[in-house]
Image (cartoon, rainbow, N blue to C red):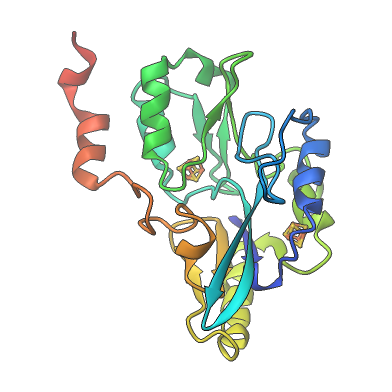
Length: 242
Ligand code: SF4
Ligand code: SF4
């Protein structure tokens, strides 16, 4: 059965328990960072931080709001990162038929710098990061080493507020719709973000652009590769010549 996350941003308190649990479970080391005037730390995703809680402040409907966005790979239903990487190195990125999770493999180290950039640019959510130490792509794995044992992903097991949820896709979609109806009473502009395209369904209680450019595909970042460009990238027979 396909699996999905439901992430209710209206409930996140930015405790960063999920960020730490992810690091701990995946045995990823701390990063050497500097105070930059925000509680967001580290400042971005990296090969050592495949889940980061983003902080922003905005005035929404006259009230100052702190907005928190726990960011991770969306495990897209049809992952454009895989479409592009398959055209260069088959098996560098894989997708599981049962769960739907999208995994990077050690074969991703075979992609050239230029090809890595193309894979990154194909991602509508600006997720892939490459490990300078071994050249392998690093991103959320949907806890492939917990879920088959009946455990929840580490971030979900840790979240104390009900922000992070995980289970069968139909159950998560039903929960997302139920929460949307509830949240809309207080935040009428609340939406589910690209729910038909991803296995990580965010509920944004205010405009997704306010959280982060890449929270929603086409929300203000470069957005997903348009179909014409994707087709040219993946299928052009001439691109492998010269
Ligand atoms: Fe690939 Fe990006 Fe989708 Fe993750 S979010 S599956 S990296 S395209
Ligand atoms: Fe937000 Fe839950 Fe992560 Fe804390 S553990 S930052 S409440 S998603």
